[in-house]
Image (cartoon, rainbow, N blue to C red):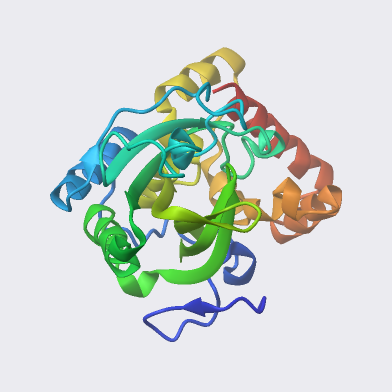
Length: 298
């Protein structure tokens, strides 16, 4: 539908992006066989990767004081930029996995609406090796092992996109893993320093949202209910804002259409989704904003 090239083990009719697949269709219909709580996600992720030869390490600070190019750690790979990625400093383990807390402020307007966060944990798979030791096939296989065994996701339910990713002064080609409208993870094969200098070493940079993994495997309408259940329960008692499961079940699969950076006319997007839900524009918008306010506080 969108012209995106993609790969699938079955004869898939679309690329898996929410705009092409009809929204987030995993809601109340997740293909993941393993239902993981927020806490269980990292335990399973680190356990499986440890068996694959990766060393789990503790997260780095969220203030990137070692990096002169950024104020905050925006991704798990940022913990190792610029000096480990450049080959000047050895990593604390190799390969490794890390539950890195990150801050990103570009999604402030999406928090509470589309399932985005300003502060989140990125689970990273990382390796820093000489070019002759760089094995993309192994890295891809390792990540599929986590998706298959850890999350219980069958390959037939995964659509793969080829793309490129840049961040923290480095870039490389990447593979994005989609399932039922959600980008589950992204594995970057980091090989260059901006603007066009080849790195001395080659780097594996897979990042997956910890919160997103819990949400996807549980298949609940709200990612925030999966991550902050106790906090939100208390906020509901304090504010009187009630959880409308029927509304959330219908709205959340379409919430990606309201992502601000993908939507030039936000009111039109709200109106389009309101029509799909057979709700008046103002009623729908007010309800979404009330819910978003509660989740933003959480």
